[in-house]
Length: 304
Image (cartoon, rainbow, N blue to C red; front, side, top):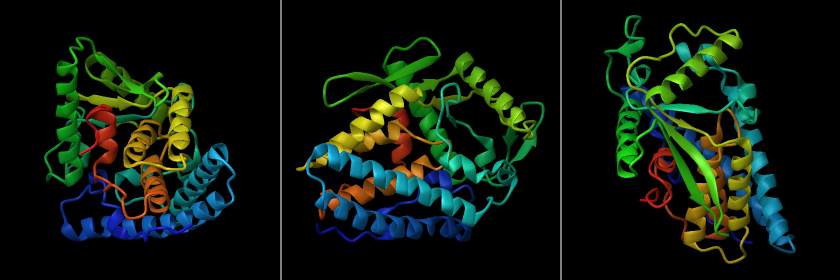
């Protein structure tokens, strides 16, 4: 089965990886695309081989699951090889989390809006429990933008409370609970839970940003996430995959991160892999902020 060539250009860098204003440091972060391209090329060769021997759609879906697991292992091994990132974030680094599933009661929370620690050179302010000052970075600007978009979605959908449940429509007509957007008291409860978790792991939680007006994206329950992930693989296993099917599956995958760390990179690498095999020459461009689009904008608006 022929596959399309995969290059670093197929992997625009997530703004969340660009946590510095220095162009040289940004260029170093963008070099991760070469790692993704190499992994995707190897994975595409494996998928093409498995699909050549797959007798039907269930077998094709099983092949996709095997390739996805291979990429989870790739990201874990890469984390081990690269070691902890520089700066304060390095204190929280644990490569095992790149292959640790998200379990019941251990929801992943991603803070949106004003995230001071993402500004280069920001300093901790104990009075406000935020990081203040510093220079804007692509990461801080992206989170600020998507925090505002999340607030607008609350207003657009007439949600008066502090939790917006994102519902996902599957190809078979089922509606599954996807991620949640949290603000107000719900967001403060997420803050408190994160602080408690860090402390339970023996980590210093004294400078976790809990002030300001946080907005969070919270992952689905493991049960719903498994349904979303399975539906994505089943969709991608269609023998005559369309661009529309591919984009729908991409959304489902980003709605269903599987592990505590690294799911974004794995999903980006996996979906490009599948596109190279199933849609050679017609693969839609991967937006640099694809994860944030899928978390915040909703199913009908997430594709550019």
